[in-house]
Image (cartoon, rainbow, N blue to C red):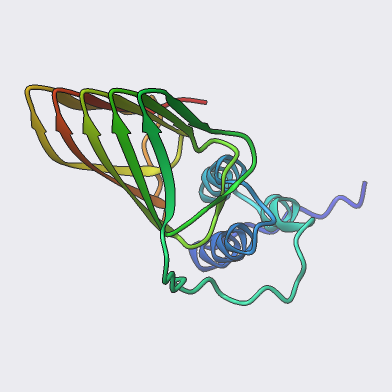
Length: 183
């Protein structure tokens, strides 16, 4: 043990570490859940050593994350049946979900980001959709429900600044959409 005290991290160093993590997530090196966990830890870090440990497995030449340009959307369709997206997959900046007398389950906990923000637009007629996001992700739920419903159950932890954003736009007729934050 050298006896030297650990150097304290500054706010600027925390922000740089989070930007590096964000770039790693956009490049597909970290899942949404991994990014959210590491980002939360970075904002709580007291020393430079703690910040270095969070980014040690990422290349040092990561370019800053830029908003991705997406020309086509990913689609999830369930007509009189079901559809599931889970595990490790690349979440497009824009995803469309259509359910007609069926259901869709979309679990984003192991998803990779295509950009720092994603929009999931759900159209549901006599059906429904469930979206699961990990702790540390900012969720915005909007849209319109006619003879149906939409709800968001936030997690227990506050969302840190600079967190990835998932916008869910739900348009339901006699159907429902739930967004659940969990680990």
